Length: 205
Length: 153
Image (cartoon, rainbow over all chains, first blue to last red; front, side, top):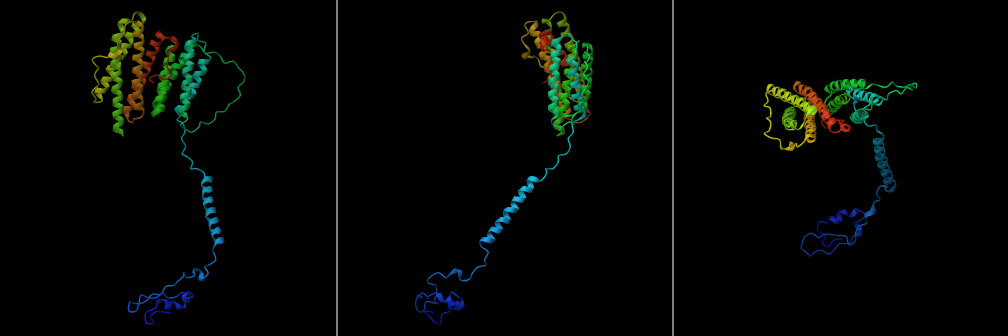
């Protein structure tokens, strides 16, 4: 099967392979030109040995396993509870300021003062204060809901202008003290509100 | 961090003193246009600002600071041709002082230490006083619009 019977013949060494006999030697370059190489004329059959049977079923099973794993991971991430943030309760002084503001607004609403222009301004200011305080409190944990007890129907006694003036003046003092115990924006807000209560007292003079 | 806060606090304190300087100057400008109760109010306000200016300067010297000097003139306050403009200028001066003291309060409320605590107390008192004086002037200008919900803002 070689052009030169003495030449080392790698091809023939593999003659025990199933493909060995299926090729035909190509003519060499000529006598004395070195060992001749034998090359198959047509491609060797690749599927001479049957590969292990793990084709479609294996592929499908592997794909399914990967998909189930990925889906489970995504689902677990969705179901996992987020880490609970640390409690951030509102400062007591800020909560007290809100309660005081509500009380002052109620007082102003039932005042007997004849100066309706002054009362209107005072009520408007207190509403603005309440709004600002609610906005400030929104930065903290929600306040516990206050119990709403049904109160018996009764007429709330009106408050005199001098009593309202006294209440405003007292709140100017108390609000400044609350502001001094707070820090940052909350403190500055309460300081400004306290100054406003002092102007209400001036208005009612 | 602390140094920058102290710098901001000192700057705000100097600004508050500068506002008091301007108020003192402004009242000398508007006072002659007023008569009667309004003039008395102007005198009382002017006295209050002079006292606060002196006390602030004194506190600054004690704190090792050099108080800011008043400017030679304040062109933004002119002209004051009549009583109405004098009242409006007075309200504006008080509003300016309230804003300056409120700003000092805000700086002090974010800074630690006894100096900041002292500034807060001074600023609260001055803010309240200016807000009340501004209300008195606004009552003379428009009684239906005499207060602001957040003085100094």
